[in-house]
Length: 361
Image (cartoon, rainbow, N blue to C red):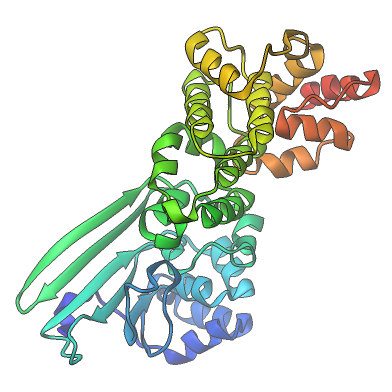
């Protein structure tokens, strides 16, 4: 490889090994002795590691130039990861990955260098993201991937820019286009702290659903995806968000499915959590006819309990919304109604809990 193509790096295998083994005392001692190592790029060649988001794209052996944080995230070294999150500012620092594209492994002939954020090193997994969640990692920072392919003395560049970790995963990880995987990785990211209120403002649901692989498409998965966003705080009192949900429901009514009951439940939840449907009479009429709904319950929508529910949902932030509701001092019925928009709360004591909950947020 032409070393001029790479940024400055450090070779320190003992430190990389300590990070892999989650040997926090060694890592702390090394960084105290040489503080500059915290933000240095550490070089190693990996013969086996296939980086999750780039599986099938990057072929080992690969040259890795990662920060200590990048290695800790790659190796799922929880204690080291926690320490670096709390004591350094390197969680967004760019890392580098290089691989050879020549069939005879002639690096000078053709090779590629990727500049990636640390979050691109692993596919979304609950256990991997748990240390990030516990330390309130910001999943909504802009993520940028730069790719340079070198052929001889020339090179071509390409770039992916995403507004959040979720959008980066969707853009570069092919399995994300499977509707089952879409639900799974979205659940992982939302539980970890991705801000659903921000995310729904940037997504076009119909376009997103159409991008999924037809062979792997099940309308029930799309409904689950929309419910996930509601559970995690999607603000249906925002007219742009509401219109997006309604358009998505219209789209789902056109798909071949026998599970119209789950679509009905979703539509009713969207209605209960919105201010009202008065601005969308045509689209609401289309949905009601498709789902054979005669009328929506205005008495439920205008009730004290749902006035409280809508106000509470609006006042709680989108990052960690589900966890915030889970910790509130109210019974399961109230929490369920807050999370889903489904009218299960009827007794006066539960309604009083919602009133008190509104005063507490």
